[in-house]
Amino acid sequence: MPFEARDFGMYVGFLAVWAYLGVLGRGRARGMPPAPILLTLVLFVGVMGFDGLNAFAYDLHKNAPAIPYLYEPRLQLRLATGLLTGIAFAGILTPIVNYSLWRVDDQRPILATWKQLGGALLVALALYLINESRLGLLLYPISIICSASVIILIALINMVFLTSLFRKEGLAVTLFDALNPFAAGVFLALIELGILSAMRYAVLGTTILP
Image 1 (cartoon, rainbow, N blue to C red):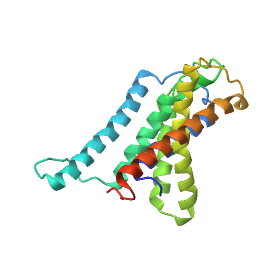
Image 2: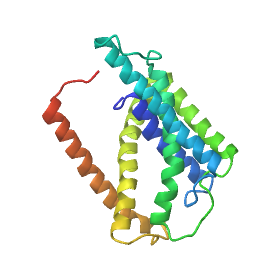
Image 3: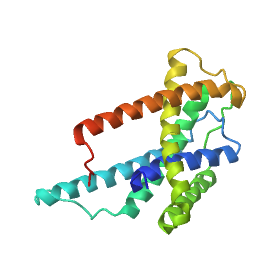
Image 4: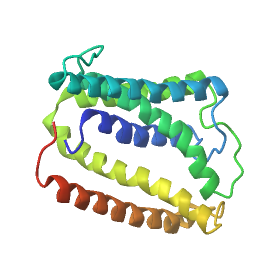
């Protein structure tokens, strides 16, 4: 796999839940979720952050036993918390993208009910089971989706920045209208990822991080 478990959860989870929102007919909704659901999404990110801090403390503990940690990190937990964060990204970032891109004034919340959030959790659960199945048949398609999901998420963030910078918000009516701003976001994403990759190679070479 091109990514570790937490990154897989974040990026592929976002892409899958984004597609799920489209199936629900809320692909262009601009409204943020109601406060309780929004707070839950923020909590999802916090859970991943807590797990990451515990994993960092665990790594430090190996060389400095005085540093405490709560539990031994597990890939399954990394995957689960990453998927929760992917749901949060979809629920929080998608309305911002829609506001920047689409002309249609759809003020519905992107996730309006607990039932809809439950559907997103089921999507995440399906991804968890697929990943844990370790089926060789799925290795290549999942690897391709992983790589594409990173580019798509970064491209969407870039697109929001570009439309705001050039005051082009809310101009797209059709998918064809959205191609140019999205392509610009992809172009910037490839440059950014290329620069980061070059910097990592300059510092670490081909060293494999633990």
